[in-house]
Length: 439
Ligand SMILES: *Cc1c(COP(=O)(O)O)cnc(C)c1O
Image: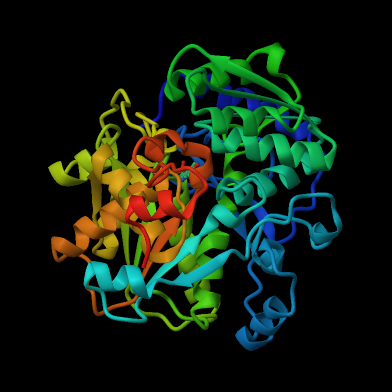
């Protein structure tokens, strides 16, 4: 499953990790291979030295009285650090300079529910555009930053489809890190400006995201990238854990209950797999009652490698060349694709896609029904939700949570042409009367 290039890199990083001082990352006890289960000490490594499978954080979770843990969480700050006992961060994390993302709104979307034929009170939008840099990426960067601090990195970096670059730039600025981030050169202006404004280095790469990612993998193995913490490459196991907080918040905001159905956008697939991990942890800890839930994945038709594999019944994901307005989801070779397929199938969910026109329609549908202006990724998720309801795959009588992971102000071009002034008139009552808008 893994590419060959990772092999030498993994061995190299495993071999040097003995020099890493022992670190305090709270309840994190080590790293474990998602393929073969081999355990490794905490370190800036991401691939298994045995089988080259991806690593994830293993925990000694606080398996005590769930009631005491619930009270401790509820007494915590209104950001992701309320869940510090379940995250790879030191206990005093809330006192450190960071952006304190999370605890975003879970909006009861009754107007949208009416339009989609969902029962009143059953449809929710988890609106992560409310994070400090207006996307869900602040959650994952906050975790990677703590790992970078613990491992002694002073430069933060990433390969990004846009939102991650801004999140890294901002978090690095606040925490006093140098940052140097890499993006495809042709991103939306809103993403480029957000990535540059925080004062770090921003490099446009002539190529798509998969080219950027390949470049970063090479840079990590080269002396040029020595001492750099790439949040989604060599710090990826820690980065991924940030997405668990979405699962925690959704359940807490539903009154410590699991939703029946979740619709999650897929770029690399990390977020979807970690939401599933977070839900399973809450069950294991006794914080929510165990019941079945279904996870649905959403992609844009112009970059739908996971959806295509799901529909074809394949276990492997065939890479695609992305061509879609949903640039934040435009990863043609998604690292977590096979795991997403497993989760969708195991939970009884599905992976579906919508075309660019449907993305635009869905952005406008969410805006006019709930007053939420989503970026193109949110349009993908809402559009796929609509399609899955129409196909009878999402049950309109059960609780559904739809993720909006980013802010429409960053992808204005998607709707600019069809969202203009209704009329432009002289400042006179006569002109207004003529425009036919009164009453
Ligand atoms: C990065 C991103 C995602 C999901 O990314 P994964 O790589 O699948 O974790 C979803 N929405 C937006 C807006 C993003 O920027």
